[in-house]
Image 1 (cartoon, helix red, strand yellow):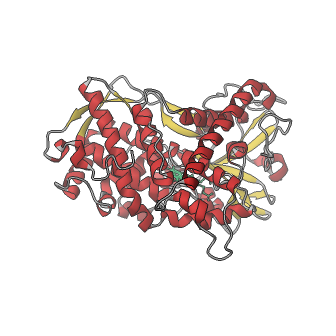
Image 2: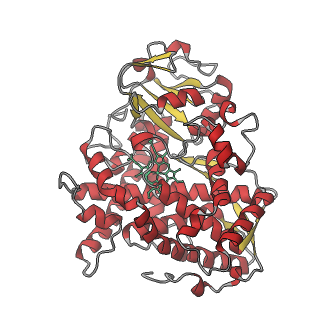
Image 3: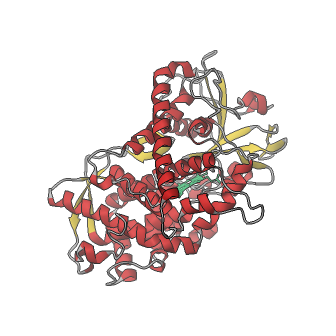
Length: 498
Ligand code: HEM
């Protein structure tokens, strides 16, 4: 791979400090006590840079800047300015900071490709049909099968009188789901006491990519860089084995994402993804397809356990919509409107990919006030956008799924809810994530009462994505006929291909 993590290329390609792109930078506020050379580092957290920025945002307003070790960034969260940045005719995705730091792992994969790289359009066009309604309906039985394995695990924990490890188990669930539906692979996460080495390596690379942003020079992370290289090598080996197994497999094709990557030619140009690009896409999808959904489910379960009235409403909806059906059909998932609102409200408070960056396509003026040169960029802080009182009212910190009732949604301006990013580079897996998460919340609500630990206070871990740290819940089995269905009867696909 051309890009290295260790070399003297201190700034990822695509990085421009704000001084170069914002001619009137002085009009944008920054935190007090800025130190010469070092910047706004007093009190800064290495491990929670996002939550630091949220703190500054509250004090400094809808647009502000931070400087660390000579690099200055502009942050935006006001609803009006964000709507301006969402204008695709003037702005595009900016691959910078944490995302550019992932390039040594996934290069020009879909998530990390620069806008001008031809492999973005090629992979987008080849893979988008893998998220069509028809494809999703095909994934549904596999999602059910994986959810069954989660519930088997939770039943065992319950029988043993133990609380469940929510982020750990949601990560098992979402990794197995994307591995199974995308690549016909089983990591055996539910059978392992500790995370699969693939997860450990992946978390290592994500954490390293984030840490690179918070040190003055990558040389300070030399030891971590070696570990990172080993993590990348492990990810590559795992994926190469998986691809090799598929290439040599006989029999019917699964029609999953991997088949599309290996066999589908672009409908117009006839071009195919190269072997190197397939490897990058597989890692991209395994990573992007599970961390964020795992966090979304974990936050939703946290809020449900803290808001019994919302949990009761959601549960009543599941009972009403799914009735006595042993397993919900594909169409019965989208009908869980209130459960979906719970998920949306959780993603509002903690969008699990908590920022995205936008760059000016040409010289322009942001919000009619801040001139930007072509290529200048800003980071949209979604957790703050989702709390902007102008859009969400003065009680924006309160968990209230009714904010997503259709009538309430209509009263809000566009571009005020952006957990999946915006424009051409918005999340390709959005429907996949929403179907999976709504289905799993429905199944869990149907089967268990969730009890929070009264001593637990929400703490948020950051590693490019966010997760509720140390969240554990106590479960109780519900005493209803469908909650009692034995596991083999619950899912016709259970065991298939395990
Ligand atoms: C709740 C779950 C999810 C959230 C919150 C989320 C969030 C996001 C966001 C914010 C972006 C845009 C990033 C940017 O502008 O730089 C993005 C892009 C992307 N997401 Fe997701 N995502 C989720 C689930 C998924 C799933 C399940 C998959 C795959 C199955 C996936 C695959 C991708 C890919 C490949 C991109 C890059 C798209 C492109 O640039 O063309 N995501 N996601």
